[in-house]
Amino acid sequence: MSSKLPNLRRTEAAPKAGSNGAGGAERDGAGRDGHALANEMLLGLPRNVCNNLVSKTQLVKLPIHSVLNEVNEPIPYLYFINSGLASVLSVLQDGKSVEVGLTGREGFVGVPVLVGFKTSPTRVIMQIEGAGYRILPKDLLAAMKTSPHLERSLLRYSQELALQASQIAACNRVHEVDERLARWLLMSQDRIGGSLIPLTQEFLAHMLGTRRASVTVAAGMLQKDGLISYVRGQLKIEDRERLENASCECYATLTRQLSAWKSEAE
Ligand SMILES: [Zn+2]
Image 1 (cartoon, rainbow, N blue to C red):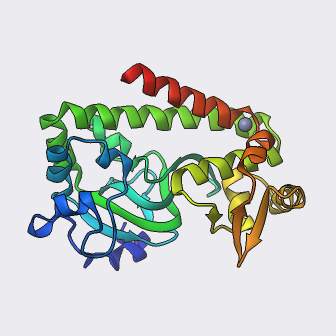
Image 2 (cartoon, rainbow, N blue to C red):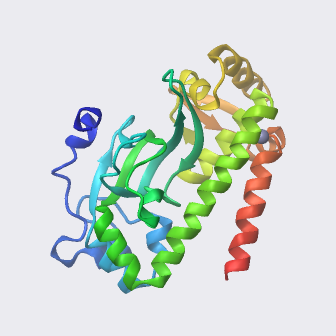
């Protein structure tokens, strides 16, 4: 396992988020390492629950291509993503993989642990570098027992990931690559904020389960129409409204369902 986590090994010395009782300070603003608490799940918890949970975590850098969970292997940590973007990948026996979910600062990585499972059925890898609050499974399970609010929040997010997986499965089978590319860019922007998405077309092809040439053509069309551009090697979303029109129905379907669940839960 450790051989697959070379980047994470370098994060061992990252500042402990809750040391010296700093959890509260981090909730209100930038911590000592300059990272403000941005994970929406943690921010949505009652202050005492959040501070208690953060005190059990370590804030670690998550470099690009860090493997957070590996398929069929034990889940060593759960991660509340604070910045950057993680991809949930379904991995086939020949080594090919296709994305079945995306997690950014709205969520966390390590869903199977919530119900007592110990291994991951998917590979979760950082596609855009960032940082996250990592916690041992036993510490998160203990915190869940003392906070119904936390438990509810975690279980709801696991449903959101399942929703993504079912929609993306249909999308990959039925919709055209240009529509899927638009859908992917919108989902990514929602999860990382800002308009710049630091990704190559090779990566996009991988994520969309298609050939690079197809993505090049699709991205070229979006660029020609002024919906996206390239700035210093990064993809920039120029016109979000028209990008939504260029997407297949899947983006709107996912957004609508998440919004409906949110209102039902309140
Ligand atoms: Zn679709």
